[in-house]
Picture 1: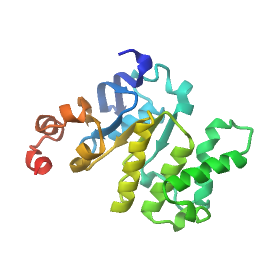
Picture 2: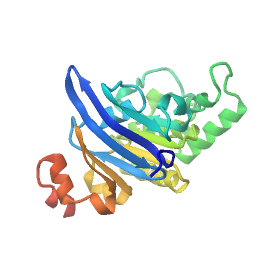
Picture 3: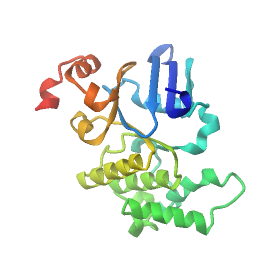
Picture 4: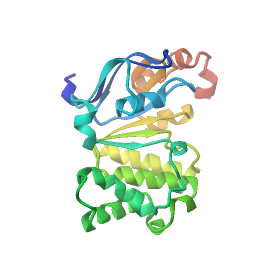
Length: 246
């Protein structure tokens, strides 16, 4: 497969904190147009992998490319929804202001967002059923509502690749269904979506591609081919047969 047809290509990637490897010699190819889960135990390096792809964390070895080029040259193609715990929810801003931030990348540093950007933001909020809360301070929203706002911000970017770090964490069942339906719509539109995910039960239902990670890459590929007892056991170190196939 040519690098230009891959959304993400990672070669020989190693990341360490205080000389302790967090990711070790990762090779990973993510095809365009998949909805991919990254699964693995706590401390497996799942969030670190996404942050390294985005240039937030610097690797000690290896390379990452987005459509064949470094992330720094492809920034406009990428949207990121961080973990809820990493966001300052007390920052005094409205839900609409947060979503409009998603349009800044296409404006550059000089221009201020105008009516066109506001229209994009409002349409994005409507997609996640948050239009009625556009003037609400983000600190006054529930956890599920906050997550929908950050998803709307990512939608406003109209990116080619979406990275999401545990988007279902701390949300109610209604919000979870709403989010996965939007992610499936993005995939249907040809977008690539990469999600750090912890609920193994829902992987076959939600995703068509999966990467098993535990410091090293255990396996990656279509869910129907590699989401099995063998790879689960290799990744988690215990037999997951009963838990997943019940």
